[in-house]
Amino acid sequence: MEERTNRGVFSGRLGYVLATAGSAVGLGNIWRFPYLAAKYGGGIFILIYLLLALTFGYTMMVSETSLGRITGKSPVGAFRTFGKGRLLSAGGWINAVIPMLILPYYSVIGGWVCKYLYTYIRGGSFTAAQDGFFGTFMTSASASEIWFLVFAAATLLVIVFGVKSGVERVSTVMMPGLVLLSIAVAVYSITRPGALAGVRYLLVPDFKHFTWMTVVAALGQMFYSLSIAMGILITYGSYMKKDVDVEKSMHSVIFFDSGIALLAGLMIIPAVFAFSGGDPSALNAGPSLMFITMPKVFESMGFGNVVGFVFFLAVLLAALTSSISLAETSVSTFEDELGWSRGKATAVVAAITVVLGSLSSLGYSTLSSVRPFGMEILDFFDFVTNSLMMPVAAFAVCMLVIRKIGTEKIAAEVRLSSKFRAEKMYRLFVRVIAPIFIAVILISSILNVLGVIKI
Image (cartoon, rainbow, N blue to C red; front, side, top):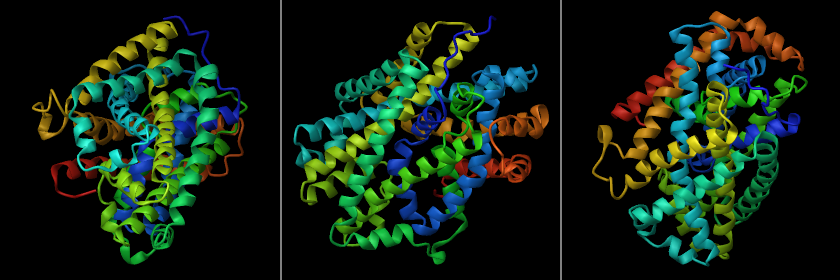
């Protein structure tokens, strides 16, 4: 296989940070983080999440980014660089396949966001808040499929233009836009009557709410939120120039990701507190929080249509920045491993997305009788990727660093552009603590699906 000579690069640290932060900031930040924060004690959950992000999360991000920058390759090639063998090949391919499986069903959810944004554009605040609106839309095969394809097409259109002209350029526009829109909705939300109780619940740690499940839930959220074990950080690391400060870049990404998650909490939790009269249980609605509860909250407010429009526009930007990174990682794998052009690789990723995404989309209508292991098709894909494959992929990265690359080589790569002040912590976590955390995530996710515990 000939080396890929036209590999894209980010223009510098800002381009890398905004693109990577865009990858990290997604739908999980907007609805999953506020939901888990409300369920597991508000401020104490956030405190534990931040501690884990700055230690375990930072460790995995440095490992994957450095692996990509050392090799200049996407996951499969990066693993192969350090030796042949079935286990190494499997580790690389698991990291590479995950985004190919996530992108299709993620695009289905992105299509739901597009539908709601369109509804608000047409002045449909009351329509979106009606009982049964979400269920009727989901179970309409044609409507769900059309909006899924709209979102997928928007994602893949960006990928065609490449790393600098596509991914980086779009991220530098979308990320500031997402921040500004989130701040606007958060300010409006916290100024509603009765909303300050929600602000206190979200930001003030109360240790009486602390349980071991708070740690497990925060671990899981941090794991998914920072784009760990999806091949994305390896791929984006391969686009990073040698003079870009790795350590500062990781801290910047964590800051962006955590900041947007907190803004999402301030958009949602105070508003729901005000709407429900201070009842935290109103937040325990899972995915329906965003598509059922929030439209009702907006409808109860003044300027509900405007606020709803701005909210779902912010959600759409978050969804797009994440889906772009999933698609870019998939395309990069085909370019590297099969020597395909970007156009051909993008076309194949589009075909995979349409086929698998249609299964998830139609799983609520035409294919509703198909329930693998008793799950909806979309939920099944989510379980396989998030609960099984991602912890295995992360463990493979740790083993590659420990047994093949060596922590010194990773540290040397980071020191090319950074002082690496957290080097001692990094070595401890990647060798000992990170594998333990990964095992906890894998076991707890399986037990959660089996109904033994609830996360």
